[in-house]
Image (cartoon, rainbow, N blue to C red):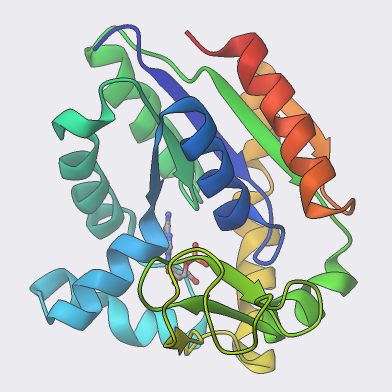
Length: 222
Ligand code: AMP
C-alpha cells in the first residue's frame, strides 16, 4: 500500500472536517476515516471500547490514545482504503501523531498532507449547535447554513430521519474546544516540521473551502 494518499484534517470541532472529508472522499475515491464516527459506532454497539469511551465523549474529553489507535489501526488495514484515506478527527494528541508516523513508516508510508482548517473559535459554537445529519446516508445539514431543499427530506438519499449528536450542546462544545487547543492545536507545528502542512481559510463558504482543499489534494495526491 506504499502509494496510498494519507490526508489529515486538522481543525477545531465545527471547522467542517466531516463535511469536507466527505466531499474529498467522493471526488478523489478516498475513504473518510472519522475516529468520532468509529467511536460512536462502538458506543452504539456496546463493545468494550465503546463502554470505556462513552462517558469521556459525553463530557467532551479525549478518549485514551490506546482505544483510539486500536480502533483506527484495524480500519486502516481494510482493503477499501487501498487508494487512500482522509483522517478526520485523528490524530488529536502528540502521542497519536507519533504513533501514526510509526505505523505508516512500518509500511513505507507517510502523511501526504495535513490540511489545517483555520477558523474563528467564536463562530464554532453557532456552527455546531445547529447541525444535524441524515440518519440514512450521513449527509450533514445545518439549521441556518445548509437546510435540506425540501424540509425534512435528505437532498442526497431522500431519507426522512435525522440525527443530532448528543455532544453538540454548548457545555460539551466548550470542553471540546478546550481539548482542541490544549492537545490538538500543537500538532500543526508537528506537520509543519514534516513539511506537509497545508493551511486553508475555513471561514469561507463550504464550496469555496471545498475548492481550496480539492486543489491541494489534486496537487499532492498519488
Ligand atoms: P468528533 O466526531 O471528531 O467531534 O469526536 C467526538 C468525540 O469523540 C470527541 O469529543 C472525543 O471524545 C472522541 N474522539 C474522537 N476522535 C478522537 C481521537 N482521535 N482521540 C481522542 N478522542 C477522540
